[in-house]
Image (cartoon, rainbow, N blue to C red; front, side):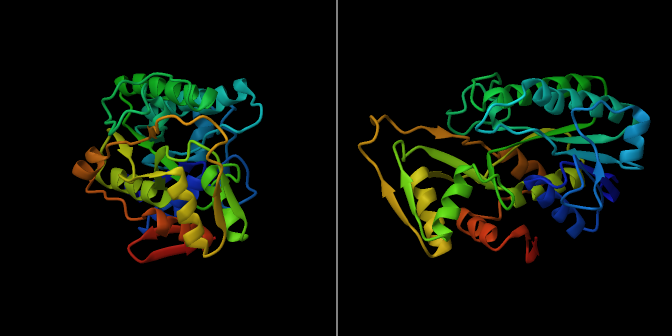
Length: 309
């Protein structure tokens, strides 16, 4: 049973801490690994840009039956080191995948919806065409290449589940992300200033729901590709309104004439029917609850379980 002992990369990141909380809530022994130990003295260390020998990975993940690979280098607003991002997001997957085949260890890889060719298509399912659209910058390309590399290793015997969450949010979301910026402004009683397009729609999924889907994958040992999404798209304006409502403070100002209007588009409207059908998974955290959890610094929501960091 793979759930007895599970390795986890990116354990101190936003999604990683939610995954760890969800697994440990079920009594799973989690072997947590992160780039550094700044956030958790219990986490082992692996700089994903550095190649590890099989013996080094044995030491990092002793006696695990599965590894959830949540570690990655994410896109930022400033300049990035593309070589470092490639090594972290692509080469590390090959490193981990080859070791996992040799040790008969399953891998759950956290991918991205940016792998789909047409991310504005409505209700994308897992069989939709993949390709680099340019969305997500070089990060988006590395997630596509990582999927390709792991898919080829699957052909060589790797037990692999790939998870494609829609737009992720939760405690630990980088401050530069839209949800974080809106929520901070509202919490401080400031005005959230919006410029068109304010009617574009996005499916936001809480990290706790993704963590619960990963738990269900490991429990079922379902080595498939899964979209994970809330099933509800909200406009940018509706997101701002939800942040103001959750904080009980703040206001919204829309600069309607700032730019030329265009027809609204929808991003990350993923069809999560496979996860619902094969895993019995359902999203539990709606946007209003998820924003309140961020304000309350809650990392886990499953049934009545809440953990605060």
